[in-house]
Length: 334
Image (cartoon, rainbow, N blue to C red; front, side):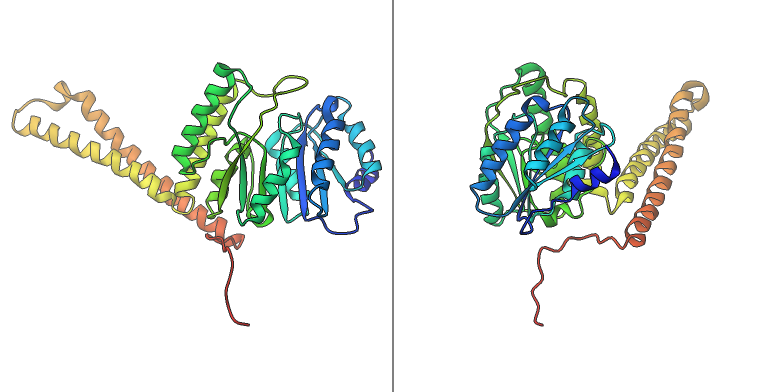
């Protein structure tokens, strides 16, 4: 596809009003369900009687998805089609959709019809009630219990404990947002499943609503047990960001104090053995003495890392004029 044609696809030409609602859907090889997906989203959005757009992100599909997207755009210019150059993964595709969405309310969902587009109005209703994020909750999962549902429940519990955000279903893509809570959101890696925790950093009001889990009508899931380790590592990242983004020295300082505290206690024990019991430390407790010495060095390294992290955070916030807070609204006289 030429750059000229791609640009034409990205610019709807017949929209009379700026959309209030943007529906963002990442797609990877979803040709079998794409036309049905479009029709059901269109019908659901039309019931809202508000201007809307559908942002479809082609995440490097190798089937007929690109051709079908081009065809759909030709007959309905409320669609915005974003073709990515290759398969970047769901996180990047979602971020591309958010970046190209123009609505004040943004709803995201999967493109494989596991989510029922007919439930979009319920998400919009909750946003209009004053919530800044609405997260879907698959109360009855259709996935295999031991390979999908059970690991998902464990992951959701762990994420909730680490982040302090009590959401039952972090993994579902079916969510709605006010535009402003996405303005400072930067996703990378596989962080899309942690969006509620990341948005909660800025104090967003979050609510869950139950949704149907329709199961996949075609193809197979892109996820499996292999993602467990990726989730675990991402969880460490989110946990650190939630607690120590603006004060990393507090984290590394605790590690420094822990290492030096243990080393100090070991030193007291060795001193007692040396001066009270009269034993040779090198002969009797050589490994223990070496362990205490290593802890001293490791503690100093933790302290140095903490200080460097503090300087990096200052550079990050100050060079980009980043704020360490998020304003909900301002009351003042003119």
